[in-house]
Image 1 (spheres, rainbow, N blue to C red):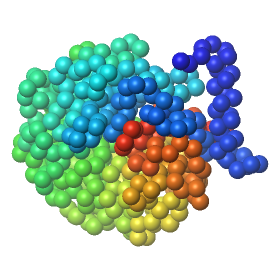
Image 2 (image 1 turned 90 degrees about the vertical axis):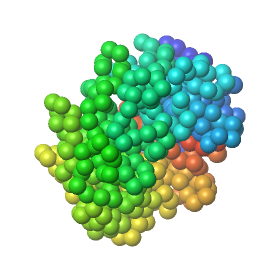
Image 3 (image 1 turned 180 degrees about the horizontal axis):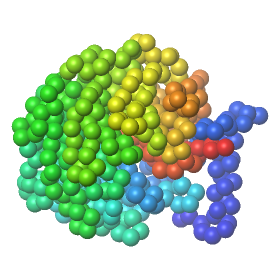
Image 4 (image 1 turned 60 degrees about the horizontal axis):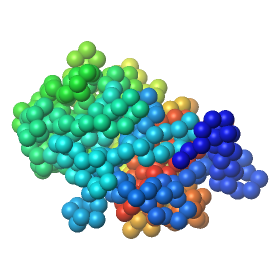
Length: 445
């Protein structure tokens, strides 16, 4: 149990300072944006905070933060049916010092409160909007009502013929696609579901009722998806990836693993509807613009700066910088860092599975893992005024020659999503056996 009052704030300050000191070489001063290990929450891992008898982090797949920042939600989609890990969604209360404490869970996991209709198996994305949390799976979009304190209350599904709500989405049948992406507008009014597979894909616009949390279908646009407006090009929306909305709400970008592309949709602020206006891809598939390097090779995740002037995408070859026109949202290739052909080689030689931008826009952080899960790390990429990136170090496990070791093992080597809900903190999610949430303190001055 966390202490309270002035003593806890003093202790938290000392702990954070100590973590930063221990994370850097003797005599070195931490530069702005550098990371210091604070603690890891996991299950029976030496050196980590024990989560308790119920472990909803096992095979965690995605995480998000409540709009007011006081709660982190983690969804785990299960292990593929062997029975060693079963689906669940969990809530973690975030304290003033950014430490997290498990406050509850729902799902099929013994010890969690059972869901009434939601099926979280193979969940791949989670977002929070207003007082609701939404989870995308291959068979449905599930919703959870939350309490005033951020806890999980009741569940209902909003796309599944068996539970009402949005009974059908054009061209999309349960389990016909997987690894869906989900994003929401800043005001929580519109949700966008990107679903792809079997040579087709589309972005579905779902209008949210602020009171009930129910979603209404408001159109779709895509490639070879029956019932959806066609984009007029092929090969760019047929594989899993990410959906990223700009802070101004005027652009939505779909990142697709194959062929390594980013497709730009212009968004109508009044209606929320989308129109495809361009793309960039590693190979020029679909008539897209071709960058000067192969940095877009197998990209899977994206993050945009608060100012909206840069989009960063992460993939097998590194992190690519796409400059964004803040007037019309158009993208232009502006370099990459990593080991794909043509990129500036620096930092750990591994696969980037996620990328985030700090809320102050000064730092970019990547989640990287080595071959055969030999190591995992959070990398710091310092951002220049024009958005270009410079490698500035890493912290993790299994790569002591390059990264500051955090101590606990088996918690970052199967790298997962990152969360940066505040300028002073970064959370790293371990997504495999046992699961883990690792907290880093971020130097801000």
